[in-house]
Length: 308
Image 1 (cartoon, helix red, strand yellow):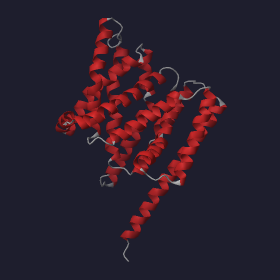
Image 2 (cartoon, helix red, strand yellow; image 1 turned 180 degrees about the horizontal axis):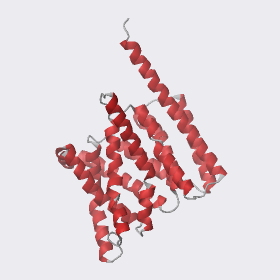
Image 3 (cartoon, rainbow, N blue to C red; image 1 turned 135 degrees about the vertical axis):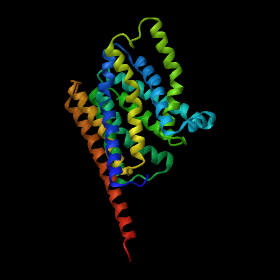
Image 4 (cartoon, rainbow, N blue to C red; image 1 turned 120 degrees about the horizontal axis):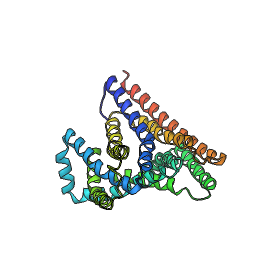
């Protein structure tokens, strides 16, 4: 994390809140695309194609063109990004399908689980130590998932797939020595040929929706900024904010999605409410542990700075 002045720290906090608010409200962007007639595959194709345009513009503004060329020429790095592209494409496709088929609450559960799953993966893959509070948070989340499965009458596949795919994506991106914008551009470049081919096929058969109506054209074009914009805000904020702050902010997105799902009348029983209650308690324990660690670290730094 870079050193910052109070003004830049405030700007970073605004950027961090902004990125998670955009992610949380993104169902309200993808749902009008679906209402215009586009299915998840067509929306995904637009995300890839428009993502290339927006990400390329940001890479140029950041002066990272040389880094993109270096990544494309390095097979080891490119191999990691091929794997991350598959995972993020799966995540995007399932999310878009879910919010357009009445499963926004399940997407919310998935992203509540994500930070807790990250903690478990860190312990498993990187031998990171999990505190007692962390174990309690994971156990509470597990109970929440089990209750969610009972409430739904099936395994919450959407929630688990979103959580696992995004957590695995994060693990892989940790191995990639490239900025977030560069990595996203390469991922979109890998997806774009298939996406463009699909859009051309739809156009040739008269079943594409871009250009069909002004509303459909507008919403499908929004696939670019809603894909790239939040990630850029996140990348900028993450370099300037403590990890503990990021830990707090990451629960904004699933909370907003939860309220969207409830407001739109998705099936919400008392048992489903109890399952979310366990998830929220687990998240609260996670946040309390993160806050305690941050306080302890600040106290240690303060004591070291004081004269003997």
